[in-house]
Image (cartoon, rainbow, N blue to C red; front, side):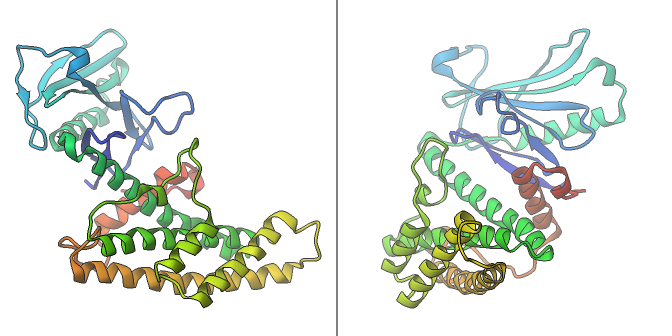
Length: 332
């Protein structure tokens, strides 16, 4: 069973779940990203797994159960809460400042379904892996989660760029490859600053932009990359010239004299430049490994061979990013 980790959005806990389970709160617009957090299988689901956390200061401490320490294996207290429609396994524990609850819910009509036992077994395995993160480490845990999301999104973008190349959809190639270059430079800036400041801190502003936040534009990313010595003046000029062309392609194809042949040539230039920037990023990753500083600097060894487990986790990350059936990869 391949497992992927999932972080509670505010950094309260981390848990491993099966790679072929989907986090449902992000799927529906009318479901908030707060407790309970729901998960279920992408295909042929017979039930769901829910996790919740609530401050003990709000819910009150139950004197009959101990308050356990964070970042260690949790002793769960199990109960049942069945009715004529649904069967529910319930687990709870008081850990540090939180009441942690887990539920396994399935329809009473599925009680003899062969996959129910598998569901319950997977839930038990997941809650056994759950760890509450110490209060002082939660902000960093959120930053790491944003970094993981960034890397997963970047990896997923290649599904789109490869399809665009196969179909010779040059405008789409320009759009997604310019995004990839921007991503390479953003992570390069984060890693370079970690090296210069000798810190593990992650500047999330470069890696994530919420809907209500004002982001950092590509032009600013180019300028900061030049100032930090990540790119040369020559690459800076090339990036800006291509970005000007990108804007013409996307916004002025019909109202200008630009030709489709020009778009194809621009797509090729973007692909070649993307490889140059990727190599620069790799060199900064290597610098962190050698200096033992930053994301790649603590006991990190680069393995050129991707294992089957790692491949499945990447597939799961791509599935969670796309949420489109024809792009969904099989995990099992």
